[in-house]
Length: 266
Image (tube, rainbow, N blue to C red):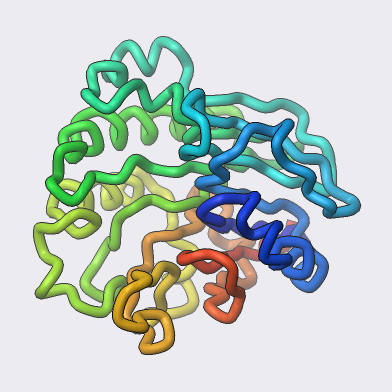
């Protein structure tokens, strides 16, 4: 059995300071823990989590973005960011905010039977000024990268994808239609993963709405469960039959996101 958790911590130093990371890891005991929005360089962090190897892809800009993987076993290989040819093909450096490849948004770890990829997808911004990057550059580049990895072995990818896929995935779909995280373009980007054969593991077990992984800090949204499901674990189709559980963990505090997880019988 392999259990993989994904958590946008919204600052790893913050969750350590709140004393929520170590108790969470000790209680849930994941084999692999993928983090997003770490907002720190590796040398700035003392994890105090026994039994794990840790790997980091930090943003060049201090206190911004970043991903990490904590793993009980050492991966066979690690890859940071997209391959150079994909970044060039999809012109990721043309974005006015800067090159996403300098933001530590993707980290891939190879294991004997699969790849694990943690991703922190760029936010489209309130004024949708980064929507063009998402729709025309980032989403197709990320999908092509996943398919490249899948040629070697099946892929499990997880993280904050910054989109609610369907109306079931946010509490107020009508009010948010066309806004960041719920534009037709972003939703189409997610659908392209499904069309390419990747499986949203949570939907293997739960078809209803009301399950969310992120809540605004405003208006007591988390307590009222007025949220969005924007954190996911997707797997290659060949792995779907091995998924024995997929869960969202709203009781785990420390970030405006909660962890999501998947258990595979391999």
